[in-house]
Amino acid sequence: MIEPIPEFRTGEKVRRSGSSPNRQSSDGSPELQRLFCASFNQDTTSLAVGGKNGYRLFSLSSVDRMDCIHQGVESPDVCVAERLFSSSLMVVVSRSTPFRMNIYHFKKGTEICNYSYSNNILAVKLNRQRLVVCLEEALYIHNIKDMKLLKSLLNTPPNPKGLCALSVNHSNSYLAYPGSFTAGEITLYDAVNLNEVTVISAHASHVAAISFNASGTSLATASEKGTVIRVFSVPDGDKLFEFRRGMKRYVSISSLSFSADAQFLCASSNTETVHIFRLEHHRPSQESPSWSGYMGKMFSAASTYLPSQVSDMMHQDRAFATVRLGAAGMKNISALSMIQKVPRLLVASLDGHLYIYNVDPQEGGDCPLVKKHRRQGFQNDPVHTDPRKRLKSLYSAARLYESADEGPAASELEVGSPSYAATVATSRNQDSPSSSSLTGYSEDGGAKRGELIPEHEFADGPLRLDDEQEFPPVSFRDT
Picture 1 (cartoon, rainbow, N blue to C red):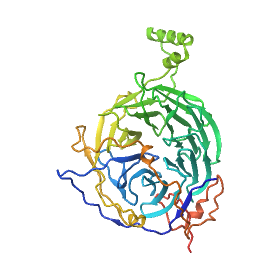
Picture 2 (cartoon, rainbow, N blue to C red):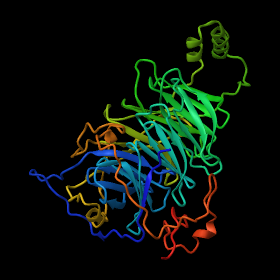
Picture 3 (cartoon, helix red, strand yellow):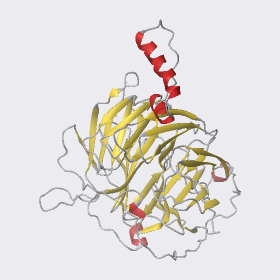
Picture 4 (spheres, helix red, strand yellow):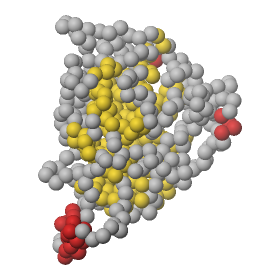
């Protein structure tokens, strides 16, 4: 069995300094670098973006401002940047070493560990129990408390986009991925008990996007055609809802995201429209019969005699609310969140903009844009090729986004950044560099397959993720 090669560094510090000065081009405007990746954390309280000179982490607690929580330049060309809830744990993958995953405690400026794999890392998903690394034809499940490898799912069907989803709920910690060679099928896997649960026949064509709700009881899917979005129950796999995004053209769905209460689902694509669907079952009306009601019943009865494709289309719900972006073609991700006690839709684009819209949960319709944030960009800070020198070059930025109104931005980021999968599809030597475990890592932490280390074993540990009593990802002992 091919296993990742771990390298643990205990106590290796990253020096922090003040904000790097803004570099300017010949015309006086900031020199901007395009983004390689963008991701919201599990509860949509922060946004992580990665680019040529590292990654940035921004707070999403306010509409009017975006404060930079952290700026990391220990790894250049960041194509994966994932944060664990509101903790200080950051998972980073660089295009320069796309087969290696680095895990940092950014508040302490410490690299916790790094793992090397047999191929390029396409995605990393994490919750409070598990960390899942997705390669094109394999998935690796780690215990997040000590980063022990619990399960290797090898020889999975080709997954060049790194498509997978991990539920954030600790009671329903499920993993979903295209685990069948049959187009449109999704494998549902229990990430705690480490066993396959079921296979869901979601679509007739290949799946393009999947996402769990916060409780891990529903799974949303979209096909490569992008016309139909379905929601299934977990773990049964029964179809709960079916929505039609459009009919005129096929699109590429880039993200699906539930609201925290699982009442709404948003879908963004490579078009200029973001759709929001309401997850509710229609109840029979108790009002007196009307002409519209009569016609509705007549069409419903007639649909039983029509071909299945036409009948399904007649029963599919349409979007409850929509958002019109300024342009199409640029990859973006969307999320539904409550900011300052108001429902919002967030759209982060790889051209460096974050759009914030108000959502009317009662009426729906067109969502008004209330704020547009423009990133100043990754200035051309020096990026060292030596890992040890990179670890000494971590900056703490103040704020890298400017706020802008609905009007056009004065300075845009470079358009045309590569797709998420393409950012890690770089050539490399097939022989992964070997790395040895260093002293100080506790191998007798007590983790077994499918079990979690008791909290008391970490109570007196030297490393905590943050001040919110999050458990640390590894256990250390004095040497």
